[in-house]
Length: 336
Image (cartoon, rainbow, N blue to C red):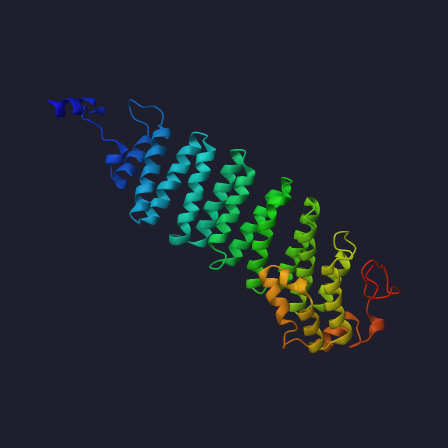
């Protein structure tokens, strides 16, 4: 009798049979239930997107628990689309973000990036642009070694979103992550450019310490790439930035450039690096690069000549602008 009473309390479906709760159904059964809720019937003129989303989400969780990652990813994608139909952009974004997390193990790089971008768009639609940028940054970390180019694209997109929204302070970690990816790929010039951009972003937030390190990192990256002219030009561009003028980081950058330009001697460059504690405080890839300067493969005399130093015809090169100076007549040892 008690058992019959319990059965009588279970809601019945259209056929009059007791309907099972979602916890009683398998993942595959839940997926089918969700698909049915997305369709119209003779008695239901409009899809039940809310019920479908609930079924898909439960199916995704069960698939994931059983290690069926691909099925879980597809279930969460359907859940996101159902939530989108209900204008529930916040939950749609979270579902797409889960898809990206799962895709890194069972899908292509393009699919993973696509899910991350769809999640970001949904967060923006929900009025949470910062969370969207954070989603891109998180997904970039999934593939920073396996797919560095895709990771760099996502990090750049996250940085641009935050800066367009005047939230420069939240972009700092993504600049650092991006520089690590680029240095690992041996894209030293791009890493240097990223550090110069980071310095400009730091200027907007008043992060003077990070700004000084960013500019010194840019100089180190270009010297590591054998581009003395580029390093010298970068120094000239930033040497009058208030936060950089007269700082220890500026002095180290000047000494390094002077060693390359005037001395063109490996032992002298190494002495500058070993005596400059500021180089050890840079982000790890730049600190490691500084320890290796100069690289044996670099022709120091040729680099010096291109910089207009004693290794070449100084008169044919533009004068090297020292800190606080605006022309070649300045004393190069004057850093005030």
